[in-house]
Length: 368
Ligand code: ATP
Ligand code: FE
Image 1 (cartoon, rainbow, N blue to C red):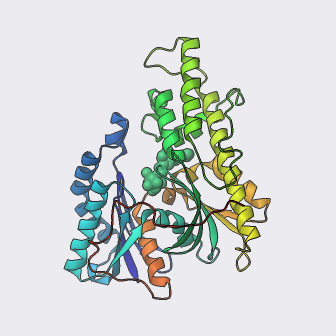
Image 2: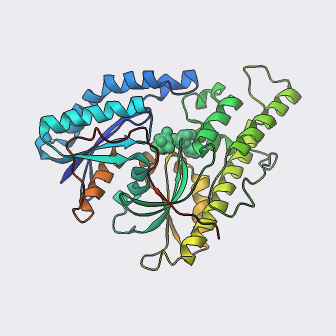
């Protein structure tokens, strides 16, 4: 059976159709990045207008790509939280309208859960539950044990910024966008690319955050503030003009990437040890999944995979096109709901869902 997925939680309008075997029949993704980068961030009413202007057409193109009629769909999955309320409401209203018109059930989807389950779509035979998942994105940093849709246990999360957010803010402060090749890139991707040309990659060092905290939480505010200070210092030393960029920006990016990577590894190591000690992996091969936009980063992924290997644990991430926001992961979460012993909750009206609520995961304390 086919499920249509609708994603409008932030600044991407994504609609896709996926079947129970994980085959993608259509994938339409309209990014708004070029409209928002100019203003240095997302303006919610503007994002809402763009979603509204594009959603109907994205849906039509989706059916056309898949060569399907609406009546062939089993259900309509839609992101209900977390995200920008003004953006979420556009997808939600459209999904409700479709469900009524086509007499299809609605499947509410938690956006972070969709990031966490997406990897199974492409590796269904390889990746069984449970697994440890590190969610690293523009709005979140979470370590969770994943047992199925609606069954995530949070081991830790960021106390302040998310890693993607830190990359974006620091890249903007550094003014990486003045370099033509990075003008339209997100901060994380630009930092990763710039770091490759570093000639003195050890020139910038940052202290390891929460190094003494015996839990699985994260903090990126320290790295961010230290970055702002280091950039300012270098700008003064070099007399960089107000719209210019420091000469050794690539060395700086290498140091930043290493700092973020080390922190992610340090906390993930604790979570891995906790999971092994709890016998969590007794029933399944030990598996670490890395997901969310920052999982695109090859350096971060390679470091985490190396760490996992030291615990005889396999590491996976979704294909790059599915790491960042898209409709496919929402449709796949809908499929996972259908697959879960057929015990999914079909709802014709999801007005009652609290779209402003954040991650609804169950918490576990991992202090030992
Ligand atoms: P959330 O899922 O928490 O609501 P989001 O949906 O905005 O946030 P994603 O689309 O999953 O986030 O990811 C976007 C983030 O990923 C951006 O902050 C961007 O900087 C980061 N990112 C993308 N590519 C890379 C990369 N190669 N290296 C590091 N970070 C990256
Ligand atoms: Fe996301």
